[in-house]
Length: 391
Image (cartoon, rainbow, N blue to C red; front, side, top):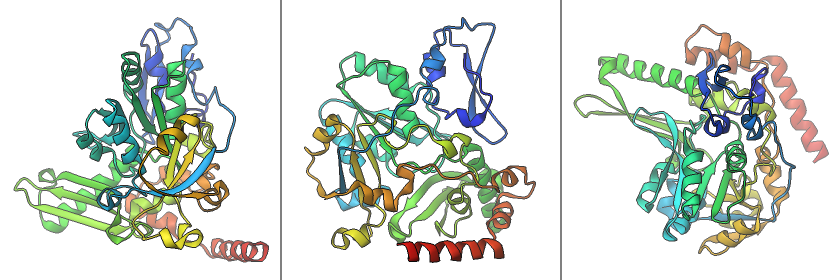
């Protein structure tokens, strides 16, 4: 039986909920805004299947990719709408053109982040772009299994722990399944993001002298590239009852939500001790931003996005290398150097508990916690000097 004694020991993949034969596990949101499984002990038959599909309990060995590329989609329009180089779209199109199904993360009608699938290329637009909060998996694993058993090809994309959860849930390998994970920094709380959005909407209503109930979310983009790939912006758009639009766009360095995210204040506790990164997820392909490409290969950097493509299995290598894509062979060590999240969890910040204890508004809390003390400034200077001296 799943017993959550330490919240860092649950990544929220929901594999246990979907695989339970008695359907006696439900999800409960905690005070931080994350979902955790709760077992109905009266209905539980102690089969321990929930434990057998848990990515934290059943960790695999870390491994390096077979081959690494820097790559970008030849279609600049798609690349600009994607987080980095637009490679996910190309992989997805290859599967769809072969009669397959693609699973990804998108917004639902209530602007909650969920898993869904598409059987058409037009449906891929919902899955493009980063979404910096944890997605609700729902019954996605069950649907993947149904498609696979019916003989369909499936591409499933998600975070490393979600891929590992799917692999354990299925309990066997399928040649028709392509798993694609991301270089994951960590997943923020959906509850915290709701808090941020509600505060933003209230501010717009106040400034425009509009009833807050008349404003509705029209669009959210975490990685708007109109200000560049390396200096991206968070953009949201609201619509009132008269169809008037109100847009807000701010650089990630200035946006109050991104500041808290990048300082790791509201990541899921398990993200500080991730059980599935460094090749442990079992994904065929890992995608992420190829940060540092302007130093390594400046001739291919146009600030529209370049993907780091890690081919972890022969299946992933076979499918990727069939694509008509602009790619450059790279060294995996370069990805590790510029994108530490590929193999290392972020440290749990001391200020995390202060964030969740704060009774101030969201913006006031982040402003307060983001201030750099004189001590922190000295430590930062010393660390930079040490890096320069030691190379």
